[in-house]
Image (cartoon, rainbow, N blue to C red):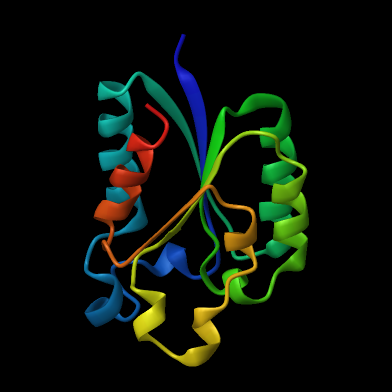
Length: 141
């Protein structure tokens, strides 16, 4: 039976491909989702793909995942550095979590070097560009 992986994306990722392409590239989030669905099928995984600019919506999706998902891949974006609420929700999730960042946050501004989410994640990926999403799926095969 196929594992269900929730892929959660935080604020401004809806602008992927348009916002700071020198950092994030030219692919859209829809492009990433399409590639992930193809990759997931080859790994016998199913994905639930979600993006929100609202912290509470992400928390609600994590709560939903508690009952449905075998794992979470999360790109919390700016909430990485600010959201204890997302950390608390992830702490209530019993299955594996992979934290993902398109850019190498450690080469960027100092405030981006701290992640609340990392304290909960089994694995952290940063700097692989949008390819990181597909690589993160490998964790769950």
